Length: 108
Image (cartoon, rainbow, N blue to C red; front, side, top):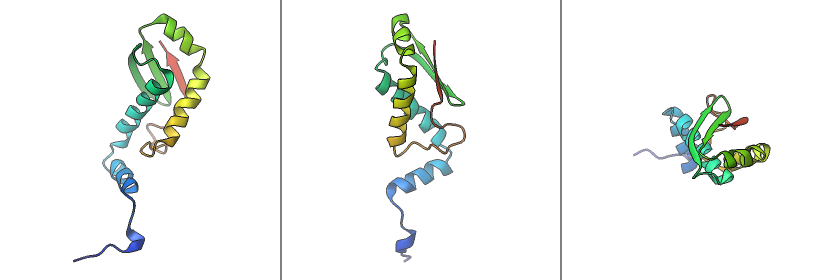
């Protein structure tokens, strides 16, 4: 029987993050976390038709032009709040080269 030495023990959260990186699942999970943060922060989930994230840019297609105009005025605040939500998420991997924090929001 082998025992885990105390210095080798890691928390469940750290083990989960290591597993996600090793299995290369963190990019997809990061995208989902970004989309969830958009829905939470913007309050426009019911108007959001499509979301796409690439190279630090979150592309959002909205069904309502009124919602688009309203959200366009708040882009900088939305960007800060989305990144704040992501920074507090323990499963969000900000060091992933293909997905990281949102740098820009483009509304269509």
